[in-house]
Image 1: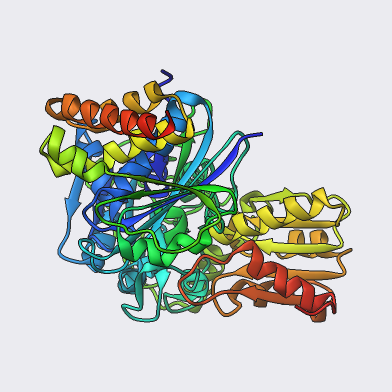
Image 2 (image 1 turned 30 degrees about the horizontal axis):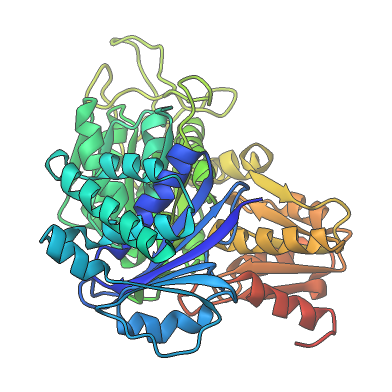
Length: 181
Length: 382
């Protein structure tokens, strides 16, 4: 049985929620899975700490909150400090090496990737950072087929920006591939 | 790709349900966490010839849907928190004038502006008694997107059948969460059309003279027939009256048409209820946590089930009494200070066995929260 719990965390404006929606949508629309995506937010949208909970399962999902994520993505130091301890032992922790200095001893597979720097170097547009993160996530975990994600990205992104996002996704995939190889 | 599968927020599931039910008109004023319903209908309604208006406030939006419905349109509004308070007077007008309409209330924390972006189920009693005077009301709720869709269709159907406002009592967690929705094909779910009078233009039409079955055929206002509509007690022509017989009969009629049909209106689901020694009564997003817990406990052989209410008003007293009869304890899982728990206590034969498992801090109650209440009830401590 497939039942995977994820937490995406970062700062408002980084596209954390959008990435979470695309991931869950890809699971439902292109892999026939069940998925829930939820987030908690306050009055401020930009700059504040952001967290989105995602569950992917081949069974109906009831409680949509994530207590111990199998996969945790932290895109800011604040998010890392706040959430790194909640990861399920043996889970996967993905951080961006520009924004996060990993300090704690976490019982997880820690994957530090220079996603932001790579996006700025190769593409030059910070707006696709979140899509690069999705690429890295899929590359590091083989959670879903890359093609499913690419389809969901094409559904979501305005036509003129599809190619830009595809490049960011591939960049993430290859970054994750380098660390695994 | 199958076009009928969607990955959406609960609020969008409500919109899909409204469109399926044949909504023609929406008037509203944006307020978190219900805004997406309005936002999406602003785009979707005009595409199919419907009308959308953003009004100056919630009072005006409620009045606008009443007017639209009276002219023969299927009409709806959506709101939250203080917006629901503002609509109450006009909801009473719709009760009194027997004008079908649907009001979605995506609940957030209150009172007042309260906790706009977080979940609560604190408007249960307001849905019932928010407007003044004796009256009756129908309120439906749902815990997942498929049911949000179906209850929305049902809300329009019940509004037409009973000529009454129907409240959709959703909550922030359900409204904002995303999950799968399968939009049924046309014809798969029943859609009730307006019951219109067959009387012709020159025939004397009595807008408030019930047929033998208690239903009142409508005539589109501004169309074939001239008639009066008022929030005052009124006779069969719709003209104001303070005749004691007219007052008594009208009040009995607007209450009895709903209260005498509790069985037809009652909607509920049973989860793991077979031989349940512990029954959790829940609804809306808190039911998801109760079902999660029951599923896990059943796998370990514990006899614990969930009675999920989908219609809250009129309260299904007899059904709840029957389903809870054999239970060692009944746990009402909700996110308020016991609004449904009070109804359950009044319904069952042994109210001392009814306990409240709640959360009132804006966070979705978790299976772990409920587990602690159960351990305490079982005398096992935490």
